[in-house]
Length: 151
Image (cartoon, rainbow, N blue to C red; front, side, top):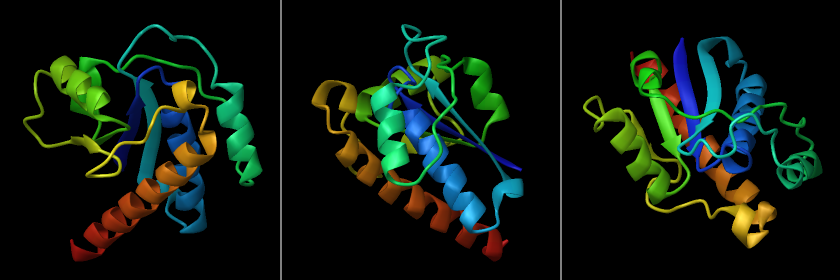
């Protein structure tokens, strides 16, 4: 089973949205049993907080279930037990790599590859964050399923 962790600053907006979106995509493709999906924060400031109400409202606008995720900080131990880490922005990626002591196994990258998912906590653009996250999750799932068939 491949273990995937979506990562953002506080784990209350973008990363829990990505977790829900990706799980829904897995269910639609009949692949839920092959992946373990989680999300975490590079900061501990929101630890124990529920997903932001505005993020949940955006998920529901798209027919997705509400996230029941409780914010947690990413840990160094996550690097050993998980296979992929998808950061929402460059700062998340840098902080993740610092926490992990680098990325010797090449497990961490930006969800969108060459661009960032803007933080809707500051912009208020949960619609844009949803669209970008959905795009990144779709590309990630296609990539992972292609890799499975090539093994």
